[in-house]
Image (cartoon, rainbow, N blue to C red; front, side, top):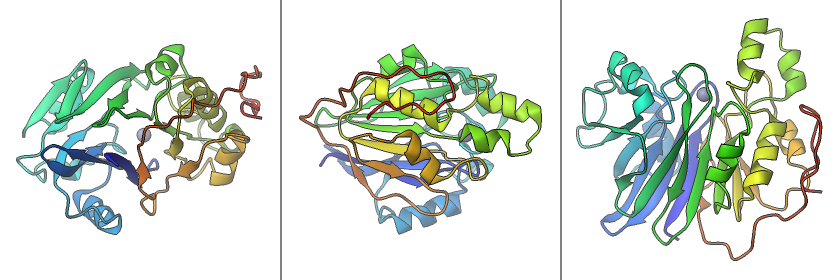
Length: 279
Ligand SMILES: [Zn+2]
């Protein structure tokens, strides 16, 4: 196995994933998002059995507080490069994230030998969030999409046929509406420039047709449950791993799959009703 994904923690209180890669220079970890404090990140790497591996780089989808923890300002290892999308540069500068080794990307970039990230900026609040199609040593691919607003055609095409798909499944629409949250916040989340509901997540995943495994990210503590997320994915033939705020997931191997992705015809359903995509 040349690569694996371990989500250290994921929720609106902090997101950080460890992408474990074997490169010609040795095995190391690329952190995707840095929404946990440095101390908590280290603790989670310890729990995941990854604390002894070098951190090869840190890549940010965007800089909301649950993806970039201010504790990293000044705490970052001088040698670890931080990768920030061009659209986020100003915010990163204001937040002090750019004062050590930092790189700005706007197209394909390589945070470690043999590893290429192809970004796509998706609708999320003012500045958007970057989703990634990640090509790994050995020719396998990981799709990583969180805080992506809506299941757009562009995003589905960008991530089509990846071996492993990590995708947000943020909220259950019924729990969201019943949450008692202020109307502006509910609109922000559900309005196409916030987060994916469980149903939108499943619809996007169906259109992407990953080959081997699906990892669900960023489940809302207040407005979702693992059961509700899994129900939206009912009939999906692939194994599904659900990330949690409390503990790292298992290491999901990113391997070449000989099988094509799920080939069921898509069932059109009205928005926000539960789709029966896979069966
Ligand atoms: Zn977020």
